Length: 517
Image 1: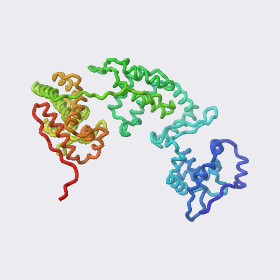
Image 2: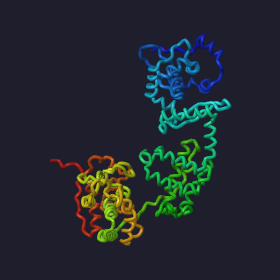
Image 3: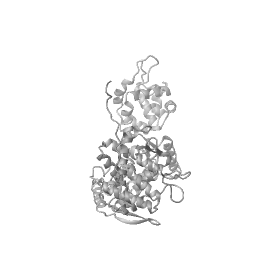
Image 4: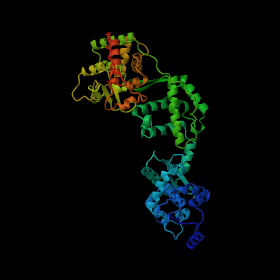
């Protein structure tokens, strides 16, 4: 294919240049870069097919740059390069030459992407952003970033640009200077407030790239209010150092933020601090400072590389004797007419290994008796299919289901789910005479019994619904018989401990190659 030659300007170009006002953004850009280096990289983009002479790759590349800088579609770029002298001169298209049409621009971008040159030349950092250009009251040109592509949409960026330009035109605002001034004086407390606002809008991603759940958001807010703000709230974000973060961790570990505060009419929050709280709050602080770095408040995250105390995993588990004591306490509670939701919910915690919230929010529509599982619409890890043993399913089938009740454990009064399971469980543990037993202890004990029975870690993770247990996601529609049998064996063993009866051993299906006939 022949190539158009734009190296020689026409007489009209010389005339326009002589009478044009010098300077301007595009002219400055044209002088800043060594375009010959780009020309060498772009040479492979020449097509060898027959047809009309091709436009120089460097010219086409400059048009793509204009599209990125000014947010132009292919047709809009065709029109702008044809009608605007500054665009023509930047791209090197003489006045007596035709400009590329929108289809030529589209095909060039496709070839650019096919060779991987779009990411290399246009987005070397892999990040794209929206920005707005304006002139302040003194006539100075300013460029302000509106947000990263992906965090905000193109339509949202347009609205922000209109608001920004409106403030500049009507009130003489200088938003970039105001932002820079605010960032230089932003305190940790103000940064935390910005972070929580973004998280509440779903802009802060949690596990699996999903927006943080309401429960996680509430926990984050509590850690911010009870640990981060009291210790670091008045500090300027730009002044924070790794030493400050390390001291923060030591202070939380030492219990410097320990407090007992009233939360509602008859509620209270007990903030103790310690190694676990320090580790988890330091992780949140690191996330908040990463948010600050992404927003341009600071260049580097001072929490990165700071050692955190090990978030000590709970090793407390119930022994068979302690399971028997808990079973006795459950039977006594039933005989003394304790709230049936609390008793049934506590049994389910023991027999399923589910989290407290998963049992509290369990709906009848999520119970698949025939499939031997719970099909949870939402959990800590998102939607989850959980294998459940027969003792737990038999317990559920024996519960009285009220007409129209959505939850397995309905509220004792009014609508919704039962909200007193946590307190009911604590009273049962106290009745059984057990110490240091929490709701999570039941989950850890379920996993420990499974380990005692010889099940692999991947199988245990799947039974508990851990994110690491990738098995769960593969059994959304039909659970493997081995996984169901495993959950059943563990549940029967625990039920046997609590009732004093010997658990029935379930033979697991054997896996392997079939014997040849």
